[in-house]
Image (cartoon, helix red, strand yellow):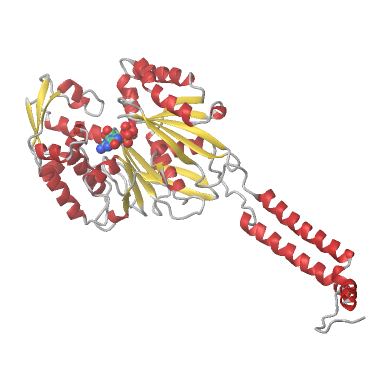
Amino acid sequence: MSAQREMKEKNPWHTPATIIITVIGVIAIVALVTVAVLQNKPLPKKYKYGIVLDAGSSHTALYIYGWPAEKVNDTGRVVQVHSCKVKGPGISSYASAPLNAGESLKVCMLEAKDQVPSKRHQETPLYLGATAGMRLLNIENSTASDGVFQAVSQALQTSPFSFQGARIISGQEEGAFGWVTVNYLDDRLKQGLETTGALDLGGASTQISFVSDNYDGSESPKNSVTFRLYGNDYNLYTHSFLCYGKDQVLRMTLAHQTQSGPATVLDPCFHRGYTAIKNYTVLYDTPCVSDRKPQPAPASFNHTGTGDFQECQRVVRNVFNFTDCKYSRCSFNGVFQPSLQGPFGAFSAYYFVMNFLNLTDTSTPLEDVKKKITNYCATPWEQIKEQYPHIKQKYLAEYCFSGTYIITLLTEGYNFTSENYPNIKFIKKIKDSDAGWTLGYMLNLTNMIPAEAPDKPPLPHGGYVSIVTIIAILLFVLIIFSLRPIWPRCSKRPQII
Ligand SMILES: Nc1nc2c(ncn2[C@@H]2O[C@H](COP(=O)(O)OP(=O)(O)OP(=O)(O)O)[C@@H](O)[C@H]2O)c(=O)[nH]1
C-alpha cells in the first residue's frame, strides 16, 4: 500500500509543474480557437436599403432592395425585400390632374416606411424612373409631362427617405439595366459566365438586350452599351422599341383596322361573342397611332371578336416593317440586330401572358404553341369567362391578342426559330427578386457593382477556424512531447523505487 502511494508520488505526470503546464496549454488552445472563431464570425447582419419606383405606362410599382451593410460589393447580395403595386393607372395617365399622380403613390410609400427600419429611413435612397408611358407623354405634351414629374417629386420629397430624383429613363437604359438585373441575380457577372439575354415586354415599349460575338458596336453604335463589371468587359447589344409594348400594339392593330372609320370592327384577335363599344378619340390618343386617325371619325365603334389566330397574326404583322434595312441584318423597322446568341430570360408581360396560356415550357415545339393559341382564340368569350371567373376581364379578353403578338414578335420580329426558341425562359422572378430594370438601375446609381473583381479573403471563415484549430492541436502535442524528459517510464511493470 505504501509502495503504491510512493509510486504515485514519484509519477512525474502528477508533479505540480506538469499539471500547471498542461492546464495552461489547454487554456491557451481554447483561448486561441475562441479568438479565431469570434474574430472571424460574420458580424450580425445590419441591412442597408434602397427604393426604386418603376413608373410604367400601365402602372407604378415600388421595389425595396436590401443588402448587408458590411459587404457592399459582393455579387448576388442585394435582394428584393418588398414590392408594392400602386393602385390605379401609370403616372402618365394623370396628365390632366398631376396632383393625383403624387397622391396615388401614398399607400405604397407608407408600406415602405413600415418595411424599412426607421433608423435607416434618412440614409435610404429613393429613385423614381419613368418608362415608355412618360416617354410618350413627353413627346406629345412636354409641359404635361413636367407637371406630372413636379407633382410626384413633391410627394416623394415629403417621404422620410433620401429622395434622389424622378426622371424618364431612356429605352437604352431600360434594356441595359434589365440585362444587368437578370445576370446579377443569376450570379453570372462576378463569375464571368456566359450571360443571359433579356427580353422585356411592357405596356408601351419592349426591349431586347444580349451579348453577341458578332457585335462589337461598330455597326449601329447606338445599340451598343459597354460595361466593365467585376473585371470583365461586356459589349451589350440593346434596343427598345417605343410603341411596341403590348397595349400600344393593340391600339396600333385596332387603328389599322379602323382606318376607314367603320362603326363596327370585326377583330380576329378577340374571342367570338366578345363585343364592346370603344371610343375613337381614346383609341387614337397616343403618338403611336395618332397620325392614322380617320378624318372624320365617328365618336365610337363596335369592337367585335371573331377569334381567329391566323387572321390575328396577319393583322399583327401589319405593325412591323420587315422590308427596310440598311444594315447587314435587322429585326424590324430598319433596326439593326446581330444574330441571336445564348439563353434569354423573357419577363414582364411575356411572363404574364405565356404563364396564363400555359406556354412557359419552351420545349413545346413552336407549331404546338401556335396550335394552343389558335384553340384559345377560337374559344367563345362566354366560355372563357366561365372558365376563368377570377381573372380580370380586361386581361382575359386580351390574352388571344397578346399571345399572338408575343409569338409574332419573337419569331418574325427578333427571328427566333424552332432551334433557338427553347433558349428562351419565361421568368417572373429570379431568387425571389422580380426581373426588370429597377434592380440594375439601383446597383448602378449606388455604385454597387465594381468595375474590378473585389479581393477575396484568402480563406473562408470555416477554413480559417479549422486551420487555427489544427495548429493549436499540433502545438499542444508539441508541448507534450517537449516534456518528454520528465515523462514516466513506459513500462507495464510498476516502477518500484
Ligand atoms: N395578365 C397580366 N397582365 C399584367 C399584369 N400586370 C401587368 N400586366 C400587363 O402587362 C403589361 C406590361 O406591364 P408592365 O411590365 O408593368 O409594363 P409597364 O411598366 O406598365 O410598361 P412600360 O412603361 O412599357 O415598361 C401591361 O399591358 C400590363 O397591363 C398581371 O398581373 N397580369
